[in-house]
Image (cartoon, rainbow, N blue to C red; front, side, top):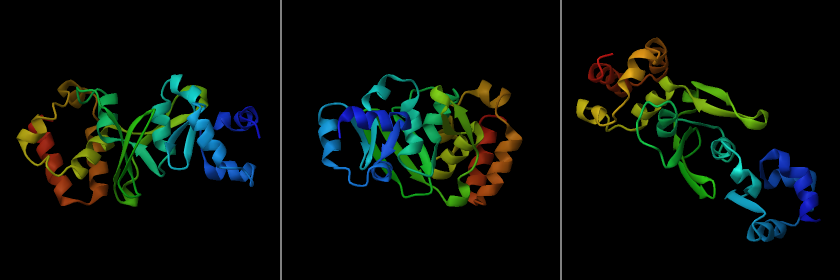
Length: 205
């Protein structure tokens, strides 16, 4: 099989794994992948997952791949909070939550980290449209904030919460406090209840 034949069949998937290939070509030689990665035709996203190098120049694919290479997951925590402008600093890692074990990956598209939460807490995300009629699973602002307070237990004092430097205009004008409290109740966590009350006090919400 030539690379052009392979590319014609697989390119529109954007991200594919070895099972996608075997479903099409059961006798596919995996050594081809190593060779094509070496030549720069393909990028290895993680063990068994690949993308064509052309996607490096397309917007938002680094975020799209976050959903695809470790599932189920959705983008949350610092990446989502920075996306909405709730925290001021740029985020180096693309942060997600998952019901799988905590993991991290590094590839040419970026640094990916995944934090484990219980399966019943995988809610509160939207499908954000991007190019090529694809979508990205992205936490709502309220869920991203709750995921952060739930997973990072050191946010348990006014000083720690102040150092997050959350955008007060956003919190007062755009954050859906009713939705925040509704989502919070679904966690059934007294520790999270405490941190949310402290957040509301710290930022006078």
